[in-house]
Image 1 (cartoon, rainbow, N blue to C red):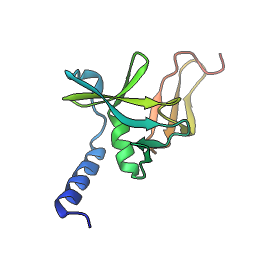
Image 2 (spheres, rainbow, N blue to C red; image 1 turned 30 degrees about the horizontal axis):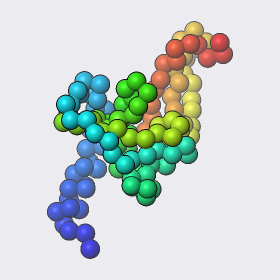
Image 3 (tube, rainbow, N blue to C red; image 1 turned 45 degrees about the vertical axis):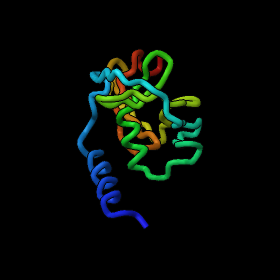
Image 4 (cartoon, rainbow, N blue to C red; image 1 turned 135 degrees about the vertical axis):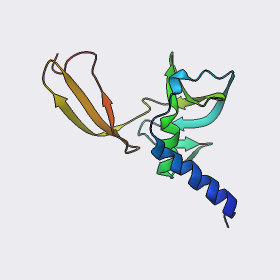
Length: 126
């Protein structure tokens, strides 16, 4: 049985997902550690070897993830936790292209179901 306060805390955490992007690139916490969290090649997130089935939790983690050099981290204002990424942190399941040949933007939906816009460094078709 789930304690009511724990259930409210999880709901509060889930509600924060709707508050937009987080400024993870502006956060530089002094506490750096590793966590047993892994993103597999197929895009499944695992914590301590068990798959994470709560999509909203995966979305929250994805929203605070950043890459520094060759490593990936979950970053908050107070800590930076290194995670393992087997291949790529996101697997695109839907892609749309907007714009013309000289100025185009690729919009994609990763497995976490959040739309993301990326401006390519080179035009498509180059």
